Length: 275
Ligand SMILES: [Fe+2]
Ligand SMILES: [Fe+2]
Image (cartoon, rainbow, N blue to C red):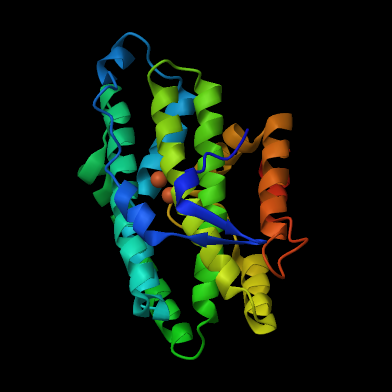
C-alpha cells in the first residue's frame, strides 16, 4: 500500500514539507461520483462485513462538522490559512459521507441526514468536549499542536482504511469509489502533517502532544461509534499481516514527526483488537 498524495499540494524544502493552501483551494471539489453506477449494487451486493465498515465510515465522515466545531474554539481560528483549509476540508468530508450514504441506500439502509440525526443523538452528551478545547486553548496554543497531530494520524489511518477496504471488498463499483475518496484524504494528510511539523518545534509542544496521544489516542470515530463497531472496523481493516504492515508504516510516519518517536499507537490498537 502506498500514499495517495496529490503531488501538487506539497513543496518539499529540505527535510520539511510545506502545504500550499492556494493550490489546495484550486483543487477542492465535492467528490465526483457522476460515473459511479450505484444501481449495480442491486445485482452485486456487498457483504455484511463491508457494509458494517461503510456505516462506520458514513457516520464518521458526517461527524467532521463536529470536529470542526471543536477546532474552531481554539486559537487555530486565528490563522486564516488554517480556517480556509478547515472550511474546505469539512466540505470534502461531507461529500465523502454522502457518497458512502448512496452505497448504503442502494442496499436499502438508512443513510444521510436521518442516519446522522441518530448518531448526533447518541453523542449528544459530548458537549463538554468542546468546552475542554476552549478551556485548554485559553492558556496554551499546544492544544492546536495536539489537534493537528491528531488530525494527521486520523487522516493517515483513514486513507489506509479506505484503500484496504477497497482491496478487501474487491468490487467493481465500490473499490474505485473508495480509492477516489482516499485520494482526497491524501490532501488532508498533507495539511495536517505539515501543521503538526510546524507546531512541534518546541520541547513543550512535543511533551504536550506525546502525553495527550499516549493517554487518549484511539481510532477516529471511536468517540462517536459503539466500541463493538470500532473493534470490527479495526479487525477488518488492520487485521492480518497486511494490517500489521500498514500499522507499522503509519507508526513510522508518526515517529518522523518532531519529538514523537516510539509511540507505537496504531500497532497497539491493532494488537489489542486484531492480532
Ligand atoms: Fe473523508
Ligand atoms: Fe480526510
